[in-house]
Amino acid sequence: MTRGLFSFLIFLGIVSLAWSFGDNYPPGEWYELIRKPSWIPPIWLSRPLWVFLYLSMAVAAWQAWEEKHPLSGRAVSWWLGMLLLNGAWIWLLFGFFSPGLALIDLSVLLIVISATIRLFKRVKPSAATLLTPYLVWVSYLWFLNLSIWWMNGGGLGVTDFLH
Image (cartoon, rainbow, N blue to C red):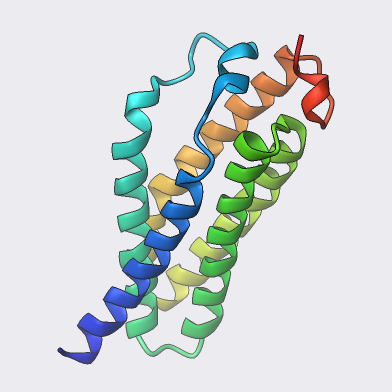
């Protein structure tokens, strides 16, 4: 196996771990009971969209890593932080039942995605381009999360959202 293929498989494995973590916290009964805006996407769209986004993230990180640029390591470190914040958002919203804390996490995540894209652009522009759909999706999720938080009276804990 070539070195490039091996490193790609590593990045694919990392996003697979992130995916499997998120699968532990699906929307459940709590999510069905809270108020949501009419423009929320259907649940069936989530899986194929996240497959595309995670694959794009894996390829982007792999490209940045393989470029052997002085900023490659830093860029991939930010990418890893991005994945951790993404997992935290899933847990905060669907595991901890806290749209307020999830919104704070998404706000930080948007900053980290933007910084990662800037670093990737310096290392390998195509890697930055691959992260753009993720930035767009997380921006949409931020507005969706804000709407859910607002429609359910604000607050940070699970008891604030059960009516």
